[in-house]
Image 1: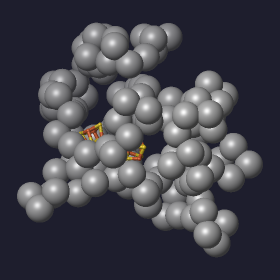
Image 2: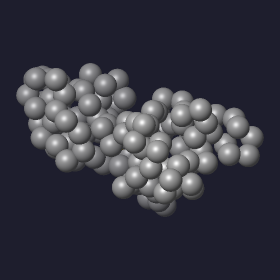
Image 3: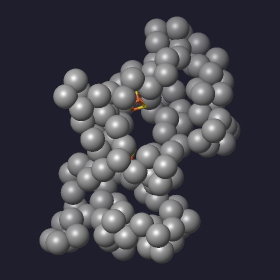
Image 4: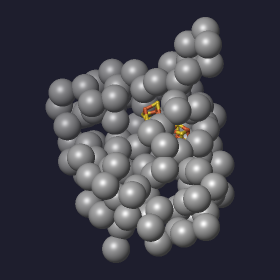
Length: 126
Ligand code: SF4
Ligand code: SF4
């Protein structure tokens, strides 16, 4: 299991209506981060504040010249983003670059490694 390579695939895959925020995220953004909250519509992410249309890419995704992606609201990002990746199956489907060949040979052990890597961001996967 590697550290995140910041390939951006997860942000791109889930940007278009695939992300949810917790009630705490929404309440915090509404009170303290109107720059984020303006992209919320009926508690759903992410919508153009001017047209009300669903965006197909997260407005906070930043791409560097050397194709490294980063999050413009990293410390205040939605719960889904803080928790990702959750399972090895999900990472496989998403072609997450943290996965190494050994992880697919022993997915149980890989899940333990992932949960340790993610322990500051989310509870362990049951
Ligand atoms: S909020 Fe940040 S982590 Fe979440 S999709 Fe957007 S750029 Fe990615
Ligand atoms: S898909 Fe995996 S390696 Fe790529 S940015 Fe997301 S967590 Fe990192």
